[in-house]
Length: 73
Image 1 (spheres, one colour):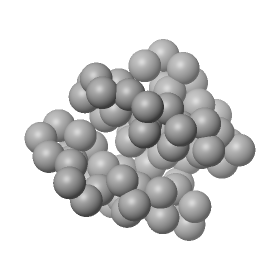
Image 2: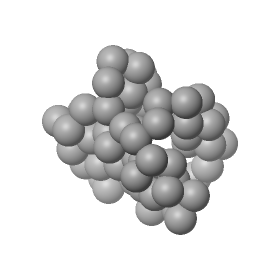
Image 3: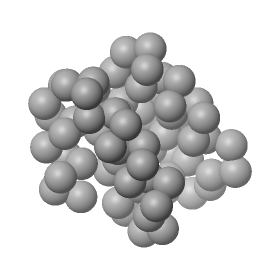
C-alpha cells in the first residue's frame, strides 16, 4: 500500500504499468483500493483507460475506489 501511495503522489504516469500489473496480481481489497486511488491520482487518459478496464466484475470497496478514481482522473 505504501508503494502504491508513493507512486500516486508522484503523479508520474510511468508508474501506471507497474500499478496495473500489481493490481492484477493482488487479492487484498485494501491494496487494490490503494492502487486504484494511485491511478486516479496520477490521472490522464492512460489511467482512465486502465481504471475502466479494471472496473467490470469488481464490487465493494474496490469498485467504490475505482469509481472515485475515475471521477478524479
